[in-house]
Length: 230
Image (cartoon, rainbow, N blue to C red; front, side, top):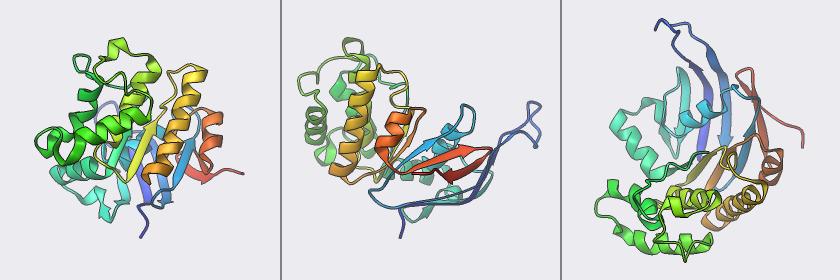
């Protein structure tokens, strides 16, 4: 069974007056992703790449079509069940790291574990320490976001996305706000963690360099998703 299957997924937003008939952003998108596989999605600004990622991650619902993730149809789940599926199966990384400014790097990483009960449950502390060390932040555990560089903050965000052992990691323009050197380093970390952790990876990016390193690439344009030439 494939990890992720999108079947004829469409998304139409409401018009300005609240009526139906607003812009059709996604139009019958089909996609299959296997466990541990990685994929880059490219396309022009405003083509719906972030919208597609939000649908896959359970942050929004499609207007029509189905999204099966790890055997569950996300479109058919109630809000509470959808939140659990997102927590248990998906890790999310955005261009803006969204770290809590008052918390240390370690505390930020552990935030997603709070929904499971006591922080640090099921070896989360040990996993956080290990992963932060793996991405070069072993000496920065107690530092708050303001004390970290942009690249370091994004690495904390990557570890936070992995703390609950998701099967799918979604990254929305993860290197967009970074300089070339930091972007290259973060790209390497994402690809290495994809292999080491066995987590499937979908990256939305404008960076042709990052897309090329990911390997399999699809282009979203005109609401349609299609493979690109190798």
